[in-house]
Image (cartoon, rainbow, N blue to C red; front, side, top):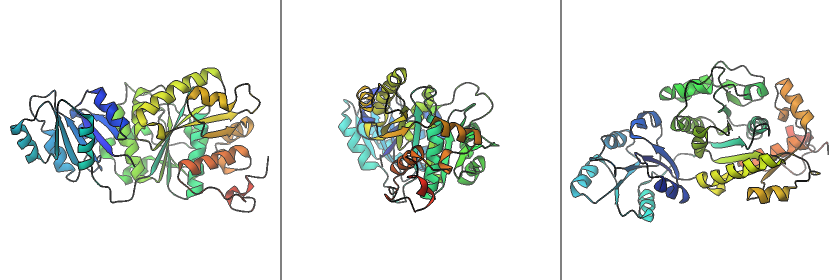
Amino acid sequence: MPIAVSLVGSDDRDLLMRLRERGFRVAQVALSELDMVHPIGSKGPDAFVFDVRGLSRLPREIGQVKRQFPSVGTVIVARALDPAEMLEAMRMGVNEWVAEPLQYSDVDAAIHRVARVVTKPLVGRTIAVLGAKGGVGSTTVAVNLATALRVASGQPTLLMDLHLAHGDAALFFGAEPRFSVLDALENIHRLDETYFKGLATTTKAGPDLLGSSNRALQGTMEAMRVRSLIEFAATAYRHVVLDCPRVDAAMIDAIDAASTVVVVANQELATLRAASRIANDLRLRCGPDRVRLALNRFDPLSEIRQADVERVLGGPVKYVFPSDYRAAVAALNRGEPLMLEPDGRLAEAIDDFARDVGGLPARPKDSSKSGLFGLLGGRR
């Protein structure tokens, strides 16, 4: 599990990218946003890094953070080794001080020395599903992934529709949520597990749903608020699936909190061009190990072969979902994920996909006589 770092008060883009390249899960936080991003009662990151190079004195927020998160280590990045300020920082509870000229290896080592050791069980897995272009079926993939995870694991699973207004995930579940993801974001300071689960809707298919709002968003939503919501959801559910918009910069920043990011494309040139750009950006942001490529509505007779897709996208296509337009549309019209009637290659492929990204045991090879997915091999 990557070390979660809150980089506070820094506008040094190079520092941010270097830390991410070294495997840290870094969130940029303004000093004015600390209360919102890390509210009282939240678990906090594994380490705080305060960049004070642009300040005339140490910010009071350092002491506030140490009182609220006494077990979380703190690193100061400063312009110089100032003995008076270092003594003040030590009194505040700061653990490490790194001064210019900045060596990123020194910052890396300092974070590793102070990072909180997690002794409790790891939080749930979060899988972000992102379409390379409109109409590639990313919501279909996300909804059926959440359903397959719930069925295969038997563990609490949440589908969060991050299209803040007028998203479609609720239609796929045949659900009419009373509350939305926008309600959760607007009340991020109130979140506890009971309140959060009260906002979610339990669907007939099994997963809980935090759906999109029917009211338009006024202005923009801060990435750190969205990130805090995603991280909180992972403490309440074993599996969290995010249905993500591809054009919202705040959402792209926020999904760095996901364990796995799946980019969905198909065998169409414009989509592949967009997918190549998105995948490359995400690899730089999240690291290549967390970004997976999925090919939806795969047609083996297409002029664009899987090998062509992999060459364009710069990496292997990890998941391939065969085309079954009729079954997908029929499931949508019924308001039931197609995984509830798991008969056919598409359902089989999604089940395998869910087990892989969810860290679940593979489906038994001889499935013709076992369980809910026993019919998967019936139609070829």
